[in-house]
Structures are given as structure tokens and as C-alpha cells.
Image (cartoon, rainbow, N blue to C red):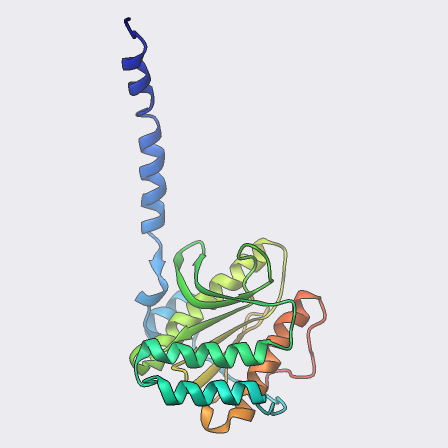
Length: 237
């Protein structure tokens, strides 16, 4: 039996009209600069920043729970925490401990973020606990090879995208950033003005102090989701 329509069907499944659209979309995506390609100079120029303002975080220390201390002890006992892959375990543990007090936040790892001119994969993003990544409130950048300068540049560009995505959705909120190698943490705040603040470094040598800062920032994220920002801790210049 003849099948006169088979050839036509095969041709239709490869419609030449679909190729230009796909190639155009790919071209637009590749034109966006990746987060990791920024250094301090290019990040500041891209964002129109001259300098960062000093941020003194007045957070109450949070003593680590017994569960956390046991988990931390096992990490130090069984893992080589000098390598970058293992340091992620420290970041995971600290974020999990501090965020456990809040029920309206979720941690997304290796989360895709895309703005008008930049795009990339954020190491960590904090957002609402939905089945999909919604509006980002906080991003965490791992300082690869302990390069906090490059980590800061990447974090600032990611913060701008977080702010952009929130504004597109009609949300005007402060967004937060963190740069860390697991043992040392530095915090950033991108305000609605906008102004950008940076804290002094915090260390795991004072776990209670570090957990207190993480706890406060996560609390601020959740409060802003509810439209009730914790105004008791304004940045100080």
C-alpha cells in the first residue's frame, strides 16, 4: 500500500520557520554576561557604584543547638574541610541551623537567575517555599579559592538581578547577599533606594555571633515577604 503523505510529514516536522526563532533566542541568551565573569571594577561600573557603605549589624547572638553541635563535630571528624566541595557542607549546615526558625523560606542551590543584561547560576538563593523558584530575597556566593574580592563582585551583580526581578513583580524590598568560604562570612544589603551596604567579616570562631547574624537576616527576609520588615536594625554608615 502506498503512503503518499509520509514524505510531507517528515518535512513538516522540521519546519524551517522554527529555526530562526530558536537561534534568535539562543543568541539573546549568550549575549548576557555571566555573574562569574565580573571582577570588582567591572561590577562597580556595571552597577554604577562608587563605593559600598559600612553596615554594622546589631544582631543578638544565637547559641547553636545540640543537634547542630553534634553535626558540626561529625563534619570536622569525617570530612576534609579544606577542599571547596567539603566547605559546602559547612555552608549548608550553618544556613540550615539559622533558617530552621522560619517556615516561609526555602533554600535553593545552584539556582538559575536571569536579568536584563546578566545571567548565571547562583550558588544559593533564598525564596518562598514553593514548588518553583519565585522572587529571590537573598543570594549566597561561595568564595572560590578564598577569593572574596571576586565573590563580592559576583554577589553584587546577583543582588542587582534579585532587585530587578522583585521590581518587575511589583515588589519593592531590600535584598541580601552573603559571600563565604564556609569559615568566614561577609554580608551585603541592597536597599530600595538603592544603596549597597557591606559588613565586616564574621568567623565560625564565634559560632553564636555568626548564627545570630544569619538568623536575623533570614528573619528579615521572611518579614519582608509578609510586608512587615524588621525596622529595628537599620544599616549604620
